Length: 259
Image (cartoon, rainbow, N blue to C red; front, top):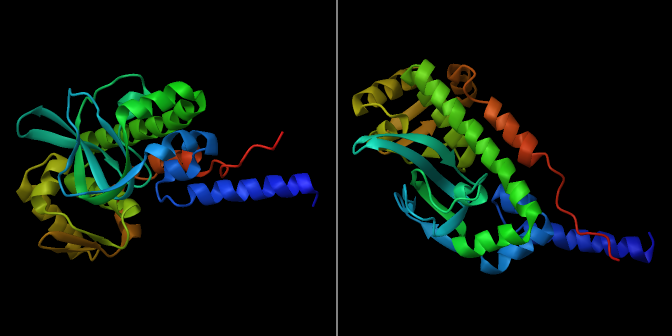
């Protein structure tokens, strides 16, 4: 190996280590130059259950890159009539409107399962987007995925029964949490699925009766992920495959060759 190639290899190793301090997939896959714009301003925070991250119709003040836990984007027709539009975990972030050139959120976003995240002020994030066209282009890939996820949520809500919808939702949560236990109440599930609480209770009982989950007070344990995916009947998997194509299968970030 020549001195020049050795230096390049060492620089690339430093780059990879710089990204590898993160669990968030977007920070992991971001190129070094773009990460360098954000990194000095990123702060690690803990987020409690139901912490509001964005408020519908209000300016976005902070962007969250999830390291653990779950966030829910929830739409509301009127008080008490609401449903989840999308889920955010360590694969994603809040602040999609900023990436598309707006400064405010259309929907509420709050913490569904206690989380940790790296946060950055929205003004500093927007400045980084204006500084680097590659940063916006990269993050638009995630925004595109999130729209795909939301479209399959709409399709499943319109065409599938509550048991199948619940199966999809549980698998999507399982993708984003460590272990197979979800700390979730029936009341919260009813909001996420946009149905009445008794319907959630019956659906959980049906899945438990088939040995797919174990449902306890404030907790659901996933026992058979494969059969839950089968019950989701095509509503799970296609958006996830697109995420892999758009984000996960990108080459690992490398440092540029020295001049």
